[in-house]
Amino acid sequence: MTGDLTEAVVAAQAGDEESFRILYRSLQPGLLRYLTALVGPDAEDVASETWLQISRDLSRFTGGEFRAWAVTIARNRAMDHLRRQRRRPSLPVPVQALSDLAGDADTAERAGETIGTESALALIATLPPREAEAVLLRAVIGLDAETAGRVLGRRPGAVRTAAHRGLRRLAALLERGDAPQSSDDERVTPPRPRPTPHASRVEPADG
Amino acid sequence: MNFRRSGRSGRTVGRAEAERLLDPTGTPSATDDPLARLLAAAAGPARPGELAGEQAAVAAFRAVRAAGVPGPAATGRRRRRLTTGVVAWIAALAATATAGVAFAAVTRDHAAERAPDPAPSSATATATGSARPTPHRSGPDRRTPPRRSPSAPGGTPSAPGPIPGPGGPPGTGKVVGQCRAYLAMSPEQRVKVLTRSGFAGLVAAAGGADRVGAYCRDLVPGYPPTGSHAGAGVPPGPGGGPGRKN
Image (cartoon, rainbow over all chains, first blue to last red; front, top):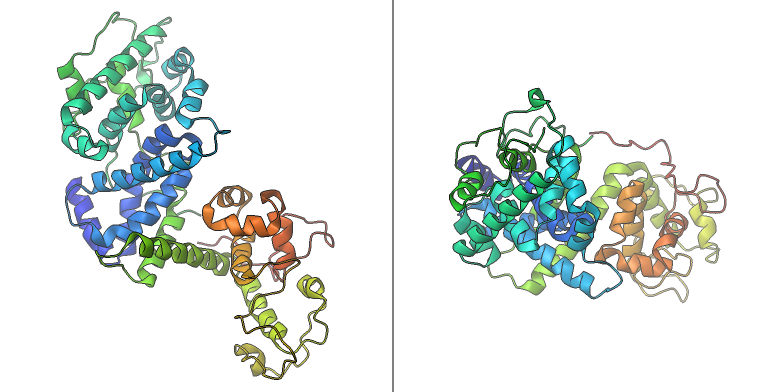
Protein backbone atom coordinates (compact mmCIF):
# COMPACT_ATOMS: atom_id res chain seq x y z
CA MET A 1 0.00 0.00 0.00
CA THR A 2 2.74 2.39 0.96
CA GLY A 3 4.44 1.58 -2.29
CA ASP A 4 1.39 2.57 -4.30
CA LEU A 5 1.09 5.79 -2.40
CA THR A 6 4.73 6.64 -2.89
CA GLU A 7 4.25 6.42 -6.59
CA ALA A 8 1.16 8.61 -6.43
CA VAL A 9 2.94 11.08 -4.15
CA VAL A 10 5.82 11.50 -6.57
CA ALA A 11 3.47 11.96 -9.50
CA ALA A 12 1.33 14.41 -7.57
CA GLN A 13 4.41 16.37 -6.64
CA ALA A 14 5.07 16.67 -10.32
CA GLY A 15 1.58 18.10 -10.72
CA ASP A 16 -0.38 15.04 -11.76
CA GLU A 17 -3.98 15.57 -10.79
CA GLU A 18 -5.07 11.97 -11.10
CA SER A 19 -2.41 10.95 -8.64
CA PHE A 20 -3.59 13.60 -6.28
CA ARG A 21 -7.05 12.10 -6.55
CA ILE A 22 -5.63 8.72 -5.67
CA LEU A 23 -4.06 10.20 -2.57
CA TYR A 24 -7.30 11.88 -1.68
CA ARG A 25 -9.41 8.80 -2.12
CA SER A 26 -7.13 6.57 -0.19
CA LEU A 27 -6.53 8.95 2.69
CA GLN A 28 -9.64 11.04 3.06
CA PRO A 29 -11.95 8.46 4.67
CA GLY A 30 -9.42 7.70 7.38
CA LEU A 31 -8.57 11.35 7.92
CA LEU A 32 -12.22 12.27 8.17
CA ARG A 33 -12.89 9.54 10.70
CA TYR A 34 -9.89 10.52 12.74
CA LEU A 35 -10.85 14.19 12.58
CA THR A 36 -14.40 13.41 13.60
CA ALA A 37 -13.06 12.00 16.82
CA LEU A 38 -11.05 15.17 17.34
CA VAL A 39 -13.42 17.94 16.30
CA GLY A 40 -16.81 16.30 15.87
CA PRO A 41 -19.10 17.75 13.22
CA ASP A 42 -16.46 20.23 12.06
CA ALA A 43 -14.35 17.39 10.72
CA GLU A 44 -15.23 18.09 7.10
CA ASP A 45 -14.13 21.68 7.36
CA VAL A 46 -10.90 20.71 9.00
CA ALA A 47 -10.36 18.02 6.38
CA SER A 48 -10.77 20.66 3.66
CA GLU A 49 -8.15 22.81 5.32
CA THR A 50 -5.96 19.76 5.60
CA TRP A 51 -6.14 19.03 1.89
CA LEU A 52 -5.43 22.62 1.08
CA GLN A 53 -2.30 22.46 3.16
CA ILE A 54 -1.35 19.10 1.71
CA SER A 55 -1.64 20.60 -1.76
CA ARG A 56 0.47 23.52 -0.74
CA ASP A 57 3.16 21.65 1.11
CA LEU A 58 3.32 18.58 -1.05
CA SER A 59 6.45 19.81 -2.74
CA ARG A 60 8.16 19.83 0.60
CA PHE A 61 7.33 16.27 1.47
CA THR A 62 10.66 14.54 1.17
CA GLY A 63 9.70 10.95 1.65
CA GLY A 64 8.85 8.66 4.50
CA GLU A 65 5.38 7.62 5.48
CA PHE A 66 3.01 9.84 3.55
CA ARG A 67 0.05 8.80 5.69
CA ALA A 68 1.86 9.95 8.78
CA TRP A 69 2.76 13.23 7.14
CA ALA A 70 -0.80 13.87 6.04
CA VAL A 71 -2.33 12.86 9.34
CA THR A 72 0.11 15.13 11.17
CA ILE A 73 -1.16 18.03 9.11
CA ALA A 74 -4.72 16.99 9.83
CA ARG A 75 -4.01 16.84 13.54
CA ASN A 76 -2.38 20.25 13.56
CA ARG A 77 -5.33 21.74 11.75
CA ALA A 78 -7.66 20.10 14.25
CA MET A 79 -5.68 21.48 17.18
CA ASP A 80 -5.81 24.95 15.65
CA HIS A 81 -9.51 24.53 15.19
CA LEU A 82 -10.00 23.50 18.81
CA ARG A 83 -7.94 26.44 19.99
CA ARG A 84 -10.11 28.78 17.96
CA GLN A 85 -13.20 27.19 19.41
CA ARG A 86 -11.97 27.52 22.93
CA ARG A 87 -12.00 31.23 22.42
CA ARG A 88 -15.70 30.92 21.83
CA PRO A 89 -16.77 29.26 25.05
CA SER A 90 -20.40 29.05 24.07
CA LEU A 91 -19.65 26.02 21.95
CA PRO A 92 -19.29 22.66 23.64
CA VAL A 93 -16.08 20.73 23.39
CA PRO A 94 -16.74 18.61 20.33
CA VAL A 95 -15.37 15.32 21.59
CA GLN A 96 -17.42 15.69 24.69
CA ALA A 97 -20.50 16.47 22.67
CA LEU A 98 -19.94 13.43 20.55
CA SER A 99 -19.51 11.24 23.59
CA ASP A 100 -22.68 12.57 25.11
CA LEU A 101 -24.47 11.95 21.91
CA ALA A 102 -23.18 8.44 21.74
CA GLY A 103 -23.82 7.37 25.31
CA ASP A 104 -21.78 4.23 25.87
CA ALA A 105 -24.38 1.57 26.45
CA ASP A 106 -26.70 2.84 23.78
CA THR A 107 -24.03 2.88 21.20
CA ALA A 108 -22.80 -0.56 22.11
CA GLU A 109 -26.34 -1.74 21.80
CA ARG A 110 -26.73 -0.18 18.41
CA ALA A 111 -23.33 -1.41 17.33
CA GLY A 112 -24.33 -4.92 18.24
CA GLU A 113 -27.51 -4.79 16.33
CA THR A 114 -26.86 -2.75 13.33
CA ILE A 115 -23.58 -2.47 11.65
CA GLY A 116 -20.68 -1.08 10.62
CA THR A 117 -18.48 1.78 10.16
CA GLU A 118 -20.58 4.45 11.72
CA SER A 119 -21.37 2.61 14.92
CA ALA A 120 -17.83 1.39 15.22
CA LEU A 121 -16.53 4.94 14.97
CA ALA A 122 -19.12 6.24 17.39
CA LEU A 123 -18.05 3.62 19.85
CA ILE A 124 -14.39 4.48 19.46
CA ALA A 125 -15.28 8.13 19.93
CA THR A 126 -16.55 7.37 23.40
CA LEU A 127 -13.04 6.47 24.51
CA PRO A 128 -10.89 8.98 26.34
CA PRO A 129 -9.31 11.16 23.65
CA ARG A 130 -5.81 9.75 23.92
CA GLU A 131 -7.03 6.23 23.60
CA ALA A 132 -9.37 7.08 20.77
CA GLU A 133 -6.56 8.76 18.89
CA ALA A 134 -4.21 5.86 19.39
CA VAL A 135 -6.80 3.34 18.25
CA LEU A 136 -7.80 5.41 15.21
CA LEU A 137 -4.28 6.14 14.08
CA ARG A 138 -3.42 2.50 14.26
CA ALA A 139 -6.57 0.70 13.23
CA VAL A 140 -8.10 3.21 10.83
CA ILE A 141 -5.20 5.20 9.42
CA GLY A 142 -2.99 2.12 9.52
CA LEU A 143 0.10 3.45 11.24
CA ASP A 144 2.40 1.36 13.38
CA ALA A 145 3.09 2.35 16.96
CA GLU A 146 6.37 4.10 16.14
CA THR A 147 4.85 6.21 13.41
CA ALA A 148 1.74 6.97 15.42
CA GLY A 149 4.04 8.02 18.24
CA ARG A 150 5.77 10.50 15.96
CA VAL A 151 2.44 11.93 14.87
CA LEU A 152 1.30 12.33 18.45
CA GLY A 153 4.65 13.46 19.79
CA ARG A 154 4.70 10.58 22.22
CA ARG A 155 6.79 7.50 22.76
CA PRO A 156 5.73 4.36 20.91
CA GLY A 157 5.30 2.60 24.25
CA ALA A 158 2.86 5.25 25.38
CA VAL A 159 0.89 4.87 22.18
CA ARG A 160 0.79 1.10 22.58
CA THR A 161 -0.45 1.47 26.11
CA ALA A 162 -3.14 3.96 25.12
CA ALA A 163 -4.31 1.78 22.26
CA HIS A 164 -4.29 -1.27 24.47
CA ARG A 165 -6.39 0.45 27.10
CA GLY A 166 -8.72 1.67 24.41
CA LEU A 167 -9.23 -1.82 23.07
CA ARG A 168 -9.89 -3.16 26.55
CA ARG A 169 -12.47 -0.51 27.08
CA LEU A 170 -14.07 -1.27 23.73
CA ALA A 171 -14.18 -4.95 24.52
CA ALA A 172 -15.87 -4.13 27.80
CA LEU A 173 -18.40 -1.93 26.02
CA LEU A 174 -19.18 -4.70 23.60
CA GLU A 175 -19.63 -7.13 26.45
CA ARG A 176 -21.92 -4.85 28.30
CA GLY A 177 -24.62 -4.82 25.68
CA ASP A 178 -24.46 -8.58 25.68
CA ALA A 179 -28.10 -9.52 25.99
CA PRO A 180 -29.49 -11.38 22.99
CA GLN A 181 -27.49 -13.67 20.80
CA SER A 182 -28.28 -12.47 17.37
CA SER A 183 -28.07 -15.24 14.88
CA ASP A 184 -27.31 -13.31 11.79
CA ASP A 185 -23.84 -14.63 11.35
CA GLU A 186 -24.37 -14.94 7.65
CA ARG A 187 -24.25 -11.17 7.53
CA VAL A 188 -20.68 -11.18 8.64
CA THR A 189 -18.57 -9.72 5.94
CA PRO A 190 -14.95 -10.60 5.36
CA PRO A 191 -12.66 -8.50 7.46
CA ARG A 192 -11.31 -5.44 5.81
CA PRO A 193 -8.63 -3.99 8.01
CA ARG A 194 -7.63 -1.24 5.67
CA PRO A 195 -9.01 0.14 2.48
CA THR A 196 -6.64 -0.37 -0.36
CA PRO A 197 -5.75 2.71 -2.32
CA HIS A 198 -7.74 1.53 -5.26
CA ALA A 199 -10.72 0.23 -3.40
CA SER A 200 -12.52 3.52 -3.65
CA ARG A 201 -11.65 4.41 -7.18
CA VAL A 202 -14.96 3.20 -8.44
CA GLU A 203 -16.45 6.17 -6.68
CA PRO A 204 -17.68 8.61 -9.28
CA ALA A 205 -15.89 11.90 -9.25
CA ASP A 206 -18.56 13.94 -7.56
CA GLY A 207 -21.48 14.43 -9.82
CA MET B 1 -22.31 -7.06 11.11
CA ASN B 2 -22.55 -8.02 14.70
CA PHE B 3 -19.75 -6.97 16.97
CA ARG B 4 -21.04 -8.77 19.96
CA ARG B 5 -20.70 -12.32 20.95
CA SER B 6 -22.25 -13.82 23.97
CA GLY B 7 -19.96 -16.77 24.19
CA ARG B 8 -17.17 -14.81 25.77
CA SER B 9 -17.77 -13.11 29.02
CA GLY B 10 -15.28 -11.30 31.16
CA ARG B 11 -12.92 -11.17 28.25
CA THR B 12 -9.76 -9.21 28.70
CA VAL B 13 -7.64 -8.03 25.85
CA GLY B 14 -4.01 -8.87 26.37
CA ARG B 15 -1.27 -6.57 25.28
CA ALA B 16 -0.03 -8.96 22.68
CA GLU B 17 -3.52 -9.43 21.37
CA ALA B 18 -4.02 -5.69 21.20
CA GLU B 19 -0.87 -5.42 19.13
CA ARG B 20 -2.03 -8.18 16.86
CA LEU B 21 -5.39 -6.50 16.35
CA LEU B 22 -3.82 -3.15 15.62
CA ASP B 23 -0.91 -4.25 13.52
CA PRO B 24 -1.47 -2.70 10.14
CA THR B 25 0.68 -5.29 8.45
CA GLY B 26 -0.76 -8.18 10.38
CA THR B 27 -3.07 -10.76 8.93
CA PRO B 28 -6.74 -10.07 9.40
CA SER B 29 -7.84 -11.46 12.70
CA ALA B 30 -10.54 -14.00 13.23
CA THR B 31 -13.88 -12.67 12.11
CA ASP B 32 -15.73 -14.09 15.04
CA ASP B 33 -13.95 -11.76 17.41
CA PRO B 34 -16.25 -8.83 18.02
CA LEU B 35 -13.42 -6.47 18.71
CA ALA B 36 -11.67 -7.39 15.49
CA ARG B 37 -14.91 -6.87 13.66
CA LEU B 38 -15.39 -3.50 15.25
CA LEU B 39 -11.92 -2.39 14.18
CA ALA B 40 -12.45 -3.74 10.69
CA ALA B 41 -15.71 -1.86 10.44
CA ALA B 42 -14.07 1.33 11.68
CA ALA B 43 -11.56 0.99 8.87
CA GLY B 44 -14.18 -0.04 6.35
CA PRO B 45 -14.34 1.28 2.81
CA ALA B 46 -15.26 4.85 2.07
CA ARG B 47 -18.85 5.79 2.68
CA PRO B 48 -20.41 7.91 -0.05
CA GLY B 49 -20.28 11.23 1.77
CA GLU B 50 -16.70 10.84 2.78
CA LEU B 51 -15.32 11.64 -0.63
CA ALA B 52 -17.66 14.54 -1.28
CA GLY B 53 -14.85 17.05 -0.97
CA GLU B 54 -12.80 15.56 -3.76
CA GLN B 55 -13.51 18.22 -6.37
CA ALA B 56 -12.79 20.98 -3.92
CA ALA B 57 -9.52 19.32 -2.91
CA VAL B 58 -8.51 18.88 -6.52
CA ALA B 59 -9.43 22.50 -7.24
CA ALA B 60 -7.19 23.54 -4.37
CA PHE B 61 -4.42 21.38 -5.73
CA ARG B 62 -4.85 22.91 -9.15
CA ALA B 63 -4.92 26.42 -7.77
CA VAL B 64 -1.77 25.84 -5.76
CA ARG B 65 -0.01 24.55 -8.83
CA ALA B 66 -1.17 27.57 -10.76
CA ALA B 67 -0.04 29.92 -8.02
CA GLY B 68 3.42 28.46 -8.10
CA VAL B 69 4.89 26.03 -5.67
CA PRO B 70 6.55 27.67 -2.68
CA GLY B 71 10.10 26.74 -1.93
CA PRO B 72 11.21 25.07 1.27
CA ALA B 73 12.29 28.41 2.71
CA ALA B 74 8.83 29.93 2.53
CA THR B 75 7.86 31.61 5.72
CA GLY B 76 4.63 31.09 7.54
CA ARG B 77 3.52 34.52 6.59
CA ARG B 78 4.05 33.95 2.94
CA ARG B 79 2.26 30.65 3.16
CA ARG B 80 -0.70 32.30 4.77
CA ARG B 81 -0.86 34.84 2.01
CA LEU B 82 -0.71 32.08 -0.52
CA THR B 83 -3.57 30.33 1.21
CA THR B 84 -5.67 33.43 0.98
CA GLY B 85 -4.83 33.67 -2.68
CA VAL B 86 -5.78 30.08 -3.20
CA VAL B 87 -9.08 30.51 -1.42
CA ALA B 88 -9.89 33.47 -3.63
CA TRP B 89 -8.84 31.42 -6.60
CA ILE B 90 -11.14 28.61 -5.68
CA ALA B 91 -13.96 31.06 -5.19
CA ALA B 92 -13.35 32.46 -8.63
CA LEU B 93 -13.07 28.97 -10.03
CA ALA B 94 -16.32 27.90 -8.48
CA ALA B 95 -17.97 30.98 -9.87
CA THR B 96 -16.76 30.41 -13.39
CA ALA B 97 -17.42 26.72 -13.32
CA THR B 98 -20.97 26.81 -12.08
CA ALA B 99 -22.14 30.17 -13.19
CA GLY B 100 -20.22 30.87 -16.30
CA VAL B 101 -23.03 32.71 -17.92
CA ALA B 102 -23.61 34.89 -14.94
CA PHE B 103 -19.92 35.56 -14.84
CA ALA B 104 -19.95 36.73 -18.41
CA ALA B 105 -22.85 38.98 -17.65
CA VAL B 106 -20.97 40.40 -14.73
CA THR B 107 -17.95 41.18 -16.82
CA ARG B 108 -20.16 43.05 -19.17
CA ASP B 109 -21.63 45.03 -16.33
CA HIS B 110 -18.21 45.91 -15.11
CA ALA B 111 -17.53 47.38 -18.50
CA ALA B 112 -20.76 49.26 -18.49
CA GLU B 113 -20.22 50.72 -15.09
CA ARG B 114 -16.83 52.03 -15.75
CA ALA B 115 -18.06 53.95 -18.67
CA PRO B 116 -19.23 57.40 -17.63
CA ASP B 117 -22.56 56.72 -16.09
CA PRO B 118 -25.25 59.32 -16.29
CA ALA B 119 -27.10 57.96 -13.28
CA PRO B 120 -24.62 56.85 -10.66
CA SER B 121 -27.18 56.72 -7.89
CA SER B 122 -29.06 53.75 -9.26
CA ALA B 123 -26.63 51.06 -8.29
CA THR B 124 -29.35 48.70 -7.22
CA ALA B 125 -31.34 49.30 -10.32
CA THR B 126 -28.29 48.23 -12.26
CA ALA B 127 -28.19 45.02 -10.37
CA THR B 128 -31.67 44.02 -11.38
CA GLY B 129 -30.41 43.39 -14.84
CA SER B 130 -33.59 44.76 -16.37
CA ALA B 131 -32.40 48.28 -16.86
CA ARG B 132 -28.78 47.80 -17.58
CA PRO B 133 -27.13 51.01 -18.63
CA THR B 134 -25.20 49.95 -21.65
CA PRO B 135 -25.26 53.16 -23.55
CA HIS B 136 -23.04 52.37 -26.49
CA ARG B 137 -23.53 48.93 -27.89
CA SER B 138 -20.58 49.31 -30.14
CA GLY B 139 -19.81 45.63 -30.44
CA PRO B 140 -16.17 44.80 -29.88
CA ASP B 141 -15.59 47.65 -27.47
CA ARG B 142 -17.70 46.04 -24.81
CA ARG B 143 -15.55 43.02 -24.80
CA THR B 144 -12.23 44.57 -24.03
CA PRO B 145 -11.63 45.52 -20.44
CA PRO B 146 -12.27 49.23 -20.50
CA ARG B 147 -9.49 51.63 -19.75
CA ARG B 148 -10.74 54.25 -17.42
CA SER B 149 -11.79 57.24 -19.37
CA PRO B 150 -9.76 60.13 -18.02
CA SER B 151 -12.69 62.42 -18.51
CA ALA B 152 -14.66 61.15 -15.54
CA PRO B 153 -15.36 64.38 -13.71
CA GLY B 154 -14.31 64.20 -10.11
CA GLY B 155 -14.46 60.46 -10.44
CA THR B 156 -13.67 57.94 -7.81
CA PRO B 157 -10.04 57.02 -7.24
CA SER B 158 -8.87 54.46 -9.71
CA ALA B 159 -9.48 51.37 -7.66
CA PRO B 160 -9.75 48.46 -10.04
CA GLY B 161 -13.44 48.44 -10.60
CA PRO B 162 -15.30 47.92 -7.35
CA ILE B 163 -18.97 47.56 -7.94
CA PRO B 164 -20.84 50.03 -5.83
CA GLY B 165 -23.02 47.84 -3.72
CA PRO B 166 -25.69 48.97 -1.33
CA GLY B 167 -23.66 50.31 1.52
CA GLY B 168 -20.66 48.36 0.35
CA PRO B 169 -17.41 49.15 2.12
CA PRO B 170 -14.18 49.70 0.25
CA GLY B 171 -12.70 46.54 -1.16
CA THR B 172 -16.03 45.45 -2.49
CA GLY B 173 -14.42 43.76 -5.46
CA LYS B 174 -13.35 40.86 -3.32
CA VAL B 175 -16.75 40.72 -1.71
CA VAL B 176 -18.39 40.53 -5.10
CA GLY B 177 -16.17 37.60 -6.01
CA GLN B 178 -17.07 35.86 -2.81
CA CYS B 179 -20.71 36.61 -3.42
CA ARG B 180 -20.56 34.97 -6.80
CA ALA B 181 -18.93 31.94 -5.27
CA TYR B 182 -21.44 31.97 -2.46
CA LEU B 183 -24.43 32.15 -4.77
CA ALA B 184 -23.06 29.29 -6.82
CA MET B 185 -22.99 27.01 -3.79
CA SER B 186 -25.53 24.58 -2.51
CA PRO B 187 -27.40 25.63 0.62
CA GLU B 188 -25.27 23.28 2.67
CA GLN B 189 -22.06 24.69 1.34
CA ARG B 190 -23.31 28.19 1.94
CA VAL B 191 -23.83 27.58 5.59
CA LYS B 192 -20.44 26.02 5.88
CA VAL B 193 -18.45 28.52 3.92
CA LEU B 194 -19.63 31.41 6.06
CA THR B 195 -17.93 29.88 9.05
CA ARG B 196 -14.57 30.20 7.34
CA SER B 197 -12.38 33.07 8.29
CA GLY B 198 -11.86 34.05 4.67
CA PHE B 199 -15.52 34.94 4.42
CA ALA B 200 -15.62 36.97 7.61
CA GLY B 201 -15.38 40.16 5.57
CA LEU B 202 -18.39 39.19 3.52
CA VAL B 203 -20.42 38.38 6.61
CA ALA B 204 -19.44 41.70 8.13
CA ALA B 205 -20.31 43.58 4.95
CA ALA B 206 -23.70 41.92 4.80
CA GLY B 207 -24.34 42.67 8.44
CA GLY B 208 -24.66 39.07 9.58
CA ALA B 209 -24.47 35.54 8.25
CA ASP B 210 -28.22 35.36 7.80
CA ARG B 211 -28.19 38.36 5.52
CA VAL B 212 -25.44 37.29 3.20
CA GLY B 213 -27.83 35.70 0.71
CA ALA B 214 -29.90 38.82 0.29
CA TYR B 215 -26.85 41.01 0.27
CA CYS B 216 -25.17 38.98 -2.42
CA ARG B 217 -28.23 38.75 -4.60
CA ASP B 218 -28.43 42.51 -4.52
CA LEU B 219 -24.77 42.93 -5.13
CA VAL B 220 -24.17 40.53 -7.93
CA PRO B 221 -25.63 41.59 -11.24
CA GLY B 222 -27.70 38.95 -12.88
CA TYR B 223 -29.39 37.91 -9.69
CA PRO B 224 -32.73 39.46 -8.96
CA PRO B 225 -32.69 41.56 -5.84
CA THR B 226 -34.46 40.11 -2.87
CA GLY B 227 -37.55 42.22 -3.21
CA SER B 228 -38.41 41.90 -6.85
CA HIS B 229 -38.77 38.20 -7.48
CA ALA B 230 -40.28 35.58 -5.28
CA GLY B 231 -37.55 33.04 -5.88
CA ALA B 232 -35.37 34.04 -2.97
CA GLY B 233 -32.48 31.75 -2.32
CA VAL B 234 -32.56 30.12 -5.70
CA PRO B 235 -29.84 31.27 -8.02
CA PRO B 236 -31.74 31.74 -11.24
CA GLY B 237 -28.73 31.14 -13.44
CA PRO B 238 -29.50 33.54 -16.23
CA GLY B 239 -29.71 31.80 -19.52
CA GLY B 240 -30.14 28.45 -17.80
CA GLY B 241 -26.65 27.97 -16.42
CA PRO B 242 -24.67 24.86 -17.16
CA GLY B 243 -25.41 23.49 -13.72
CA ARG B 244 -23.48 20.59 -12.31
CA LYS B 245 -22.02 18.96 -15.25
CA ASN B 246 -19.06 16.82 -14.67
